[in-house]
Length: 265
Ligand code: 2AM
Ligand code: CA
Image 1: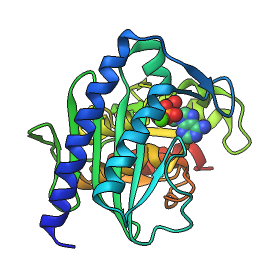
Image 2: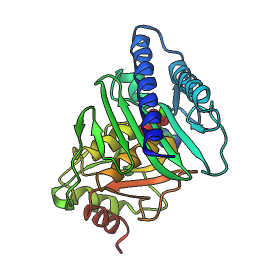
Image 3: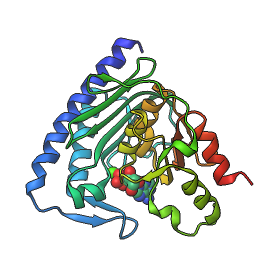
Image 4: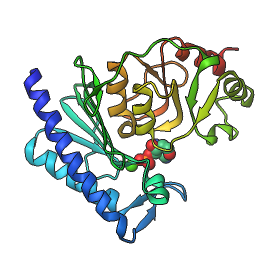
């Protein structure tokens, strides 16, 4: 697969995402049908499902031999990352979509034999398309994102949500307190995709989550790699693109400081 092939895929995918974005915006006037998945906090709407079907059908019609891993289960159960895999999250930040009608994104990551080639995150309401192709840089609309400079914890703004305050088996409360006290500020956006796009754009210095699925971070990971950010699980080990798990992305230097603050002694 050459550059031209990937550029074609990228422009198709971005066009489909823009079309999907229009459909989502049109839904704002209608009453949402909301269901819970694993628990009260894990929501899905008829729009998440409609958009996933729309995107899946576009991909399978144009690229019938590509695999699709998608949040709402309209894709496939993949056993490995061989070949070309599309990770699709039709609405990342579904709770924001329901409560706020903003601060959600469509996220598509395209991988070749497990290597992230294309990362696309579309913040629908702000009409901001974050896009990257491996080796060709990352952009927000037409603006190229700059390489991330090293950062220190004391001068950093870290995105994490309040579930870090809940008691955990794997991390001591004191470690979390040490981290939050050590940073300049914390933020929470409620959409992993938007948090990753913001980290790629340098608007936050790090983002960390106790639980993300591959469709939440596949696109963001490509963007982050293009600007030189560091990605791992929260212990500093490689992330699992089949199963997901904990997740940490940060500017160089800061990444190590966060892992040390959490697990240093
Ligand atoms: P979602 O809205 O697509 O479900 C903050 O809630 C972020 O974490 C969102 O990006 C959300 O994605 C994701 N998220 C929430 N619950 C999750 C879960 N149980 N597993 C994986 N990701 C989750
Ligand atoms: Ca989702």
